[in-house]
Length: 87
Image (cartoon, rainbow, N blue to C red):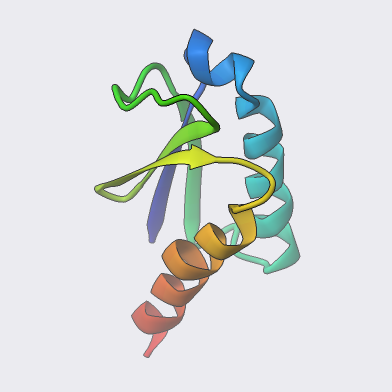
């Protein structure tokens, strides 16, 4: 099981957290991972930066998440992790 928290605090909201949540929702559905991923919103994760949104996947915080780097993040920290858990 992978736990994802997308920051929806004011700073990340202004930087596109709604779009990042939508990207996660679509990717989870596209890969049929509804039973393997818990997606939730979180108020400030405490890692604000100048670009993008803060996202916590399990215990690791990723900063600067946006449309451009989302696919790589999703593959590395969600798809690959779930694939390894299934082995």
